[in-house]
Length: 238
Image (cartoon, rainbow, N blue to C red; front, side, top):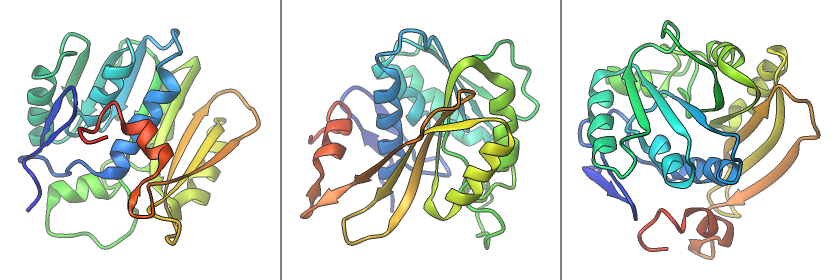
């Protein structure tokens, strides 16, 4: 049975009602995005698409001064994310809406857009409707996500996406077809002996040489130096 909450150094993620729980790759993604944005003073507004428990929004709130808007379709996840945000030090600048991002009435554009989108397209679905929405893109396809990013990102803004490695070529092709560009791609593996299992993308409207990096989560049964550097301000035991 999954833990009913995840204790970070400065906030708690309660997850007993949510479809998707806190995962290591989501924490790494949140920490990596935060490291990319924390020293950019021009990032004043951030959009978290499919905000779930509020994990990514709170990780960014800890490291940046941005006003953060989260959009969460599933009511139960939205209700728990409100609980998590209200219990955090940043409830004055993290705002979550229970809505469909495809029809949401946006009032402005954003300096940064982040998304840990549905992972699996055309894969076998399970019995849980909530997990299907979170895992599968039956509610939001990657193509629809990129259309929203193109429409809602400020001209000099950046967007960040986490996906399984097996969808890398598909994602890259779609990004290019939407007149967007990849500025940085990070490939993630569990250990040196494992194959890559996640990719983290930073993109924008600006064409530039793509920086490529690798992050290995564990080395010699311990968290790697790069993983530790990214997560040390979040994880209790680092």
